[in-house]
Length: 217
Image (cartoon, rainbow, N blue to C red):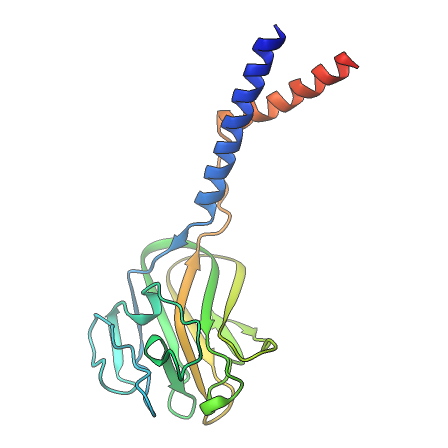
């Protein structure tokens, strides 16, 4: 009897752990937009335009309207060096020309619980600064510039947005400053998931294990 219960407990615990891992992985999934619209980036010593954009508009023209496509901001490549090294990975805008608003389209109503914006932060080198704020779906979030001068990720969580279109505006530091963005990602977050029978079995097994230990004592 003890051997049987031991095998039952082992199987239930393993199944429960696997189910919990599957739920965690499902809840951590990223959401991919089908397109985004915006004004193209600019250029100075280098091009900070969205060169890989595959929609309508001139990718070779500073601040040209782009629509209906995807490009550098969703290509999965995140810059780890400052703009003067990884300049080809950034889309950049100068504030006295454009305060960028990127309009993302998801094709259908989609749950968005988190947004992450990957930006450069060389503390003013070349006129490039971290943004002062990010506005997501009309809500403005102030940005605290972290210590150091390396690129960093701005993550906004608990958004609870169920949208097919989402506007993100990135406000630069001052009149002639640049903001450089290498990637923007979206997370579905913790979506409520029905408890599978294996997870119920996991809980029951733990309860049975406690009862056996009390009985033995």
